[in-house]
Image (cartoon, rainbow, N blue to C red; front, side, top):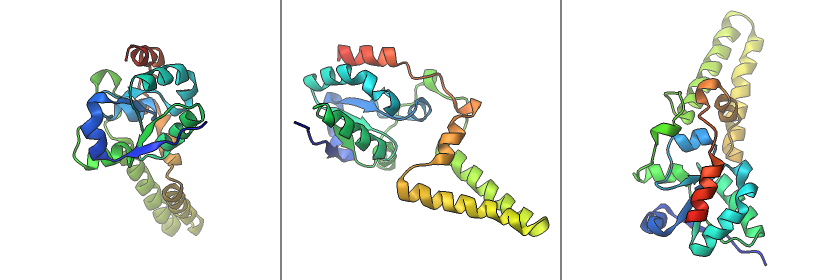
Length: 193
């Protein structure tokens, strides 16, 4: 039997935060940029390794899975539901949480060396490439305008799929790499409850 994941809005999650086990499935860099208080970082690509501990946490109480917008947490909830682990997802993710004015925790030990949030880096990079494509298109050769068109197409694709390839690429730069997720410590915390 497969369980059906539930969805909590930010107010419901905030009211119940004290009795929820919160699992943040974003990358360590995204997690370090701000996460729900008490959230444990289990990146989506590591979720299968954490199944026994998440099952144990679900046996003690409700598990809330979060990401930036809700898309990755929905995927994680579906995977956990296939394993008969009941979970809920945060509608709108940490973005909605922050928009509602709720605090995001930013531990100094996990911070990246980048001074800008990933969303700001993406906007800056996209704007720079579009501007460069237009300028080079007028000054050097019209073919350079394809750079601007490529970025525009990427932004449309990003909006339609709720993904961001540019963020993935920028996340690989040295200054955006925090120390890796300490999965062993997270799994121990899940076991302790």
